[in-house]
Each structure stands twice: as C-alpha cells, then as structure tokens.
Image (cartoon, rainbow, N blue to C red; front, side, top):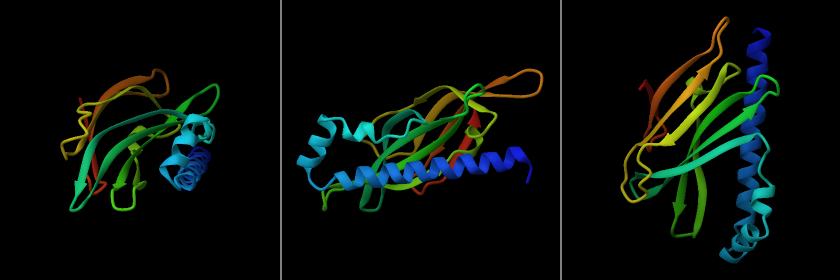
Length: 169
C-alpha cells in the first residue's frame, strides 16, 4: 500500500468513526421528544457535530416493506491547503412504533470520495418526501490530476436496499 492509499484509508476510518460517534451522541439525546426539543433549542445537537462535516442535504423517501424513511447526503472535508471530500449517503429510518429516527445504513460513494476529489456542486434532483422512490443526486466533482484538474458532472441513483449507481450527466 502506497503512502496516498494508506492516508486515504486512515482518513476514511476517522470520518466513519466520527459519523458513528455523532450518530450515537444524537441517538443518546433522543430519550423523548421533550429532550430532543431542548437539545435542538439550546444547540447541543449542533455543537456535537464534527467540524469535518462540510455539507448535509436531506430529501427523498425510501420504502422497504413496512420500513421507510428519507435519505441524507453528508460531505466530509479533510486537508488544509489541498482540501478533499468524502461523500456518504445515509438511509434514515423513521420508526413510528417507537417514535424514533435512526440511521439504517451509510454508503460511501467511492467515486466521489478521496484525496483527489472535491465536490463543487450537489443537489437532490427530486426532494419529494411523500413518494417512495430511489434517490437521484446531481452534481459536479473536481478531480485533481497532474497538470490540470477536470470537473465531471454526475448523477447518482440510490435505492432502498443501499445499492447505488453513478453515471455522467
């Protein structure tokens, strides 16, 4: 494994760990609707977020049998002089019976993650939370290359079974 691969694996492990810790911290606060309301109002939920989270988008709706929820896109940032991004899509499950919201799955969109990637633009194509359908995300990623960077437009489709496909746009 070369130095860049080892560094990328290390960064990914840290970011995945930070997302899991943030999720556990958020989950611990969810004891009741009153506790969640207080946590939001006084800023505790936001203060607990990792500083490497660059942007978050939510939208769409997934359904799988009697389970359902919405999608959340999380772009994490690393580096200092050379900033790079790691892009994740989460399936957030709404548990009506237990009055809870939890992360069902977290997917690393590898084609949009790494030491040579920088997300320039990102949007949810159909943000409707009423209709169960695959998520469609559109955007632009800057890919660093020797000589000259290039920008690629893309579309990512994510299904309720956590599979995705990415295509040029």
